[in-house]
Image (tube, rainbow, N blue to C red; front, top):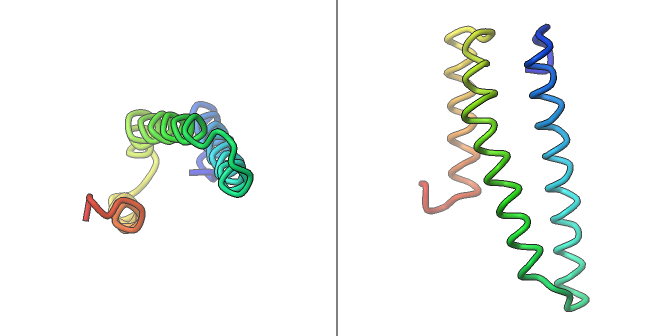
Length: 94
């Protein structure tokens, strides 16, 4: 989606990439808390909220707009990739 020449899509992609970065930073913080005995519960709740917010935006905004720019073949490939990732990270969804 980064290659799509559309201002709204570019903003959605930029925001998504920023959110990915925020989650990575938060995961690093959580890893340090595990070793240092910090407030793990509040960080885990923050992580859950960020991931749920991000997933909702992708599903309800970015992926809806993606249909305007991607071929049927690309959409099928994207769907397969997402399903594979979901199975890896959400064993209950398998």
